[in-house]
Image (cartoon, rainbow, N blue to C red; front, side, top):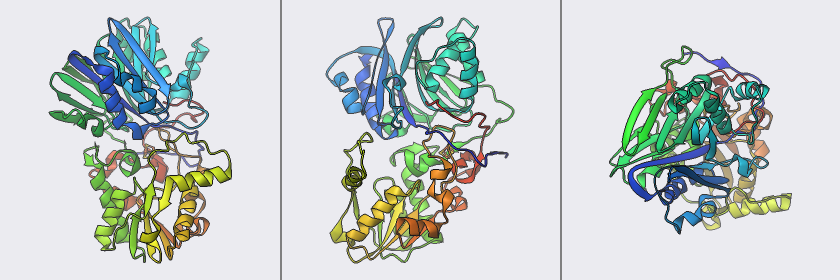
Length: 474
Ligand code: SF4
């Protein structure tokens, strides 16, 4: 086991996304099926969505900013028979939510028409981009996806498969991507397996998706993970599997993103061989064991704290109550230009159930603490609603380091746990106490803990982060 340690990096805002691909033996209304799959992956990206599918020898695509239901709703009213297609949902921050960055991207090049949808972040993208720009390449977007397409097009090998292998030989970091070339769907997962990617099969149809919750819709007969370093070539329902050659530095190693289990994935998904819900319950039970609070009522911060709160309540024997209600219909694009509107936004998003919490000593269970601003507002709302004490318990360790593998984590300076110890955090957010799950306890919640990346907690990165990520996203 070895690590490259990064002590003092600041980060750019990073992104996480969801991908979905379908290949069928017969024509089906493919965009409609992709719509439903992407709808199940909406939690992975809420700022743009897109679909590309093969029809009459061409790739047809549509992408737009917004959530799946608004960006792609026309696909529910139309019939577009096709056998193969891919889709993408994207998360980004303000300023980078441009239509050019929406995916899948479609290009026509010397390898034919190609469409690509990507989830992850290449850790050597700046180095590769600089060299391509020096050679005269022109980029229209700020995405790693466009970089991948450039690398495929510039490969000296004439065949698409060979060019894809050339591209894979150059890139490093976290990537799961789906590529449409002619009537063939390719699915690739990086050798360290940072992000989840699963494949299922049913009735002459093969589905590939970021999470099992998207495959569950189609009631597949079998589901398995796309293995780290595996390349799948799918035509109709025929699947050919091959592997990326191991690199000496990472041979045999895994670096599954543990944050998928803490927060990103949906609780009904199975990720890295674990039920997300059950792992979160275990995290809650661990924090109850190691750092119990004097509270007499446990409430989750919905929804990502719900499973951990159940685990905490079961392990501690303290009553569980739904003391906070979340408005699920606000989306991420809510504009909050002034402090007054931001305050209104928090109250609209998260609202306490006064009758349930007044006069009680509350233990609030949340998944993680980033800047502390939302927690401060939440603690104030709970006190205004009559809570006698508010104790915050986090089902993850203190977040202290940026992520270079596709996840949006602010700069080290902005991370509250990087500035303050738990008691200082409690004072800053107005809570009676704050405690985190230890890294050791978190590792105890998963099988084979050495197969996980925990770099945002430990600063120990599982592969080199060569260039400061200044502008590229996924
Ligand atoms: S640094 Fe954190 S968020 Fe990024 S891949 Fe590793 S565990 Fe996941």
